[in-house]
Length: 283
Image (cartoon, rainbow, N blue to C red; front, side, top):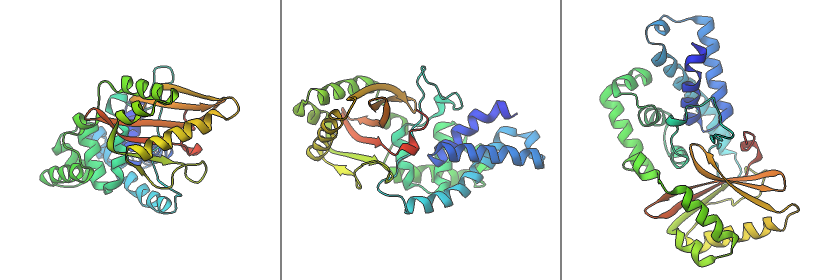
């Protein structure tokens, strides 16, 4: 049972918490409890029962995580995870990962809204099954799902976030930055583009989100030029991160940052830069 459901439960827990260590803790706690208690419901509907236990455990973790984030220095972003074929994180179900942009938007949701959204949008569970897992009525789960999408400002979650040419966009964007082509970079950014960087007080990062084309482009070029002057230089590598093309930035032999972008409506809408070393340990 542990081997059969571990990947599914880790995928669920990671998207519920946004942190890999919390996801591992949640799943481990659940399986330890199952071994000790061996509840009757486990033999009848093991998948639904285990998902319910993980959801409840993640809700408990959310309370302590919220307290940590209140004290967090600067902006908080989810921990990125490598999913490329060269460096696959085999403990997750890649096809059931929501985009990184959606995980960022999860910070606007309550634990119940997050649970319903992940169960429905990522895992594809029917509302009747979701109702059983979260302890709500089926109609209430439908309302929660609709409210979650409204809070996040998305319509069709999959269609609004995913862009089939994202890798081509990133390659063009990286080339423009390397060539100091300001005009090209600005043309690829949405007018209301927002850049969020997460250093957690352990790496240099913008304390607040940076908005609009000019400010974002200046920040990007300034950061690139500063990093290029470091010993060993700067290396940019496109790799699959959280199931989508992302950028790994290395200074010398050390990973400095992970960058993910949200491309929609033929422009880059959001740029997410993770620099907190505690969130780069999986790479």
